Amino acid sequence: MTMPQPDPQALAHSAVLAARIGDAIRADGGWLPFDAWMARALYEPGLGYYAGGAHPFGAGGDFVTAPELSPAFADCIAAQVGEWFAHCDPVVIEFGAGTGRLAAGVLGALRALGRPAHRYAIVELSGTLRAQQRETLARLVPEALDTVEWLDALPATIDGVVIGNEVLDAMPVRLFEHAGDGALDEIGVAADDAGGFRWAARPADAGLREAVAEALRAAVRADPYGDDGDGAQAADVPWALLGPGRYRSELGLQAAAWIGTVGRALRRGAMLLVDYGFPAREYYHPQRDGGTLIAHRRHHAHGDVLRWPGLQDVTAHVDFSAAARAASDAGLALLGYTSQARFLLNCGLLERLAEATRGGAVDPGSVRALGAVQTLLSEAEMGELFKVIAFGRGLPPVPLGFVRGDRSGSL
Image 1 (cartoon, rainbow, N blue to C red):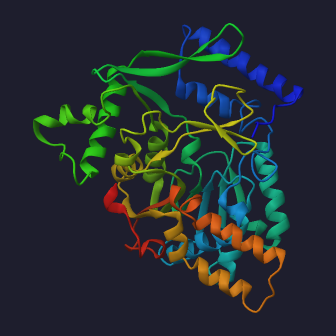
Image 2 (image 1 turned 180 degrees about the horizontal axis):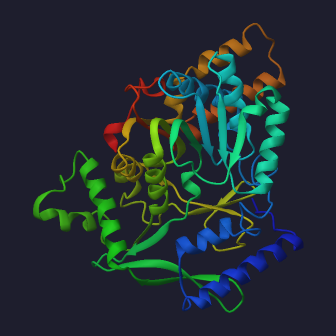
Image 3 (image 1 turned 90 degrees about the horizontal axis):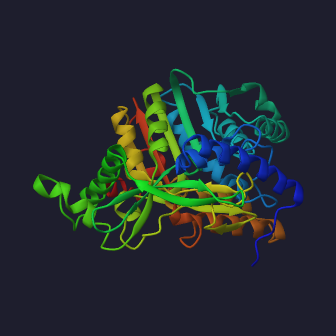
């Protein structure tokens, strides 16, 4: 299928953002690290993909998220949140709330469970998304709207549950390339002669080199068939893990920093994150030598991430081993890590679906509902690629969503 081309107005919008990024590149000596380029492409005020007034979510946008596929997803998140409410304040703080469908679903389901949220805070900087979220909430759960507030920044302290669906994958990443001979480059972006951008490499600095080495050590430590990563081999084996040829991948340093910041603010409660990704030993597998960086536009996923800044999403998969290390460093306990399919099943998705369809005739609506659930659970779609991870402080172990199929040992 051919990817739809942007209209002239959209192209003009992208050109303004490209010119602004080009100015930044020239001001920085002709080269920007990719994380700086990605931050501007996604979040430049008034122009970036998430800050420029576009509507990326849903069938008419660039991608569809789980809360928009089926209300059962929010029901299952609420089941887990409701369990935690017995041990912390009944407060939810959501990051990356998108259209507001997850917030609306969780608020309604918590009320139905008899464990309503006393406060639901959404951390959102985009005025366009705030308006969309408010409209969604007013339409779907008007009775709960007075419990919702919008925040510009993370609260200094948190007692409650933090949730984030597809938040980490949109945080800027650094790119590296290993040449197979011990050389390590950082991949950045330079301006081309046509007003666009091209990849450009520079030798990695000591900090990036050590960060890559630590990610690879984690991969070795988690591999039951690999070296244990201790002793004299620790300095050599991680680089050999990448194989003899060129190997490009990403480091989610900003995602790890965000988890650490939220973790240190969490006084009592939990952090529940849903995203696509792998543990380190799968993330840095020798066969994944091109990395995971990808762009999304009009339901097409493609590798031309430098094209059309501001008009397409740019994401990278999550290294969940790095996420777990960041949470541990912040003093949080790992409560569970599993596939999205297993989490939803543990939280009663099939029982909810059976109750919703019991005694009803098969109609187009019920067929669509079953199809959406299949997408959420299927290993070929979202069920296996998406993972769920939870961290906490002051909570009992083994939450509902992780009672079966926990994979924490793989991290």
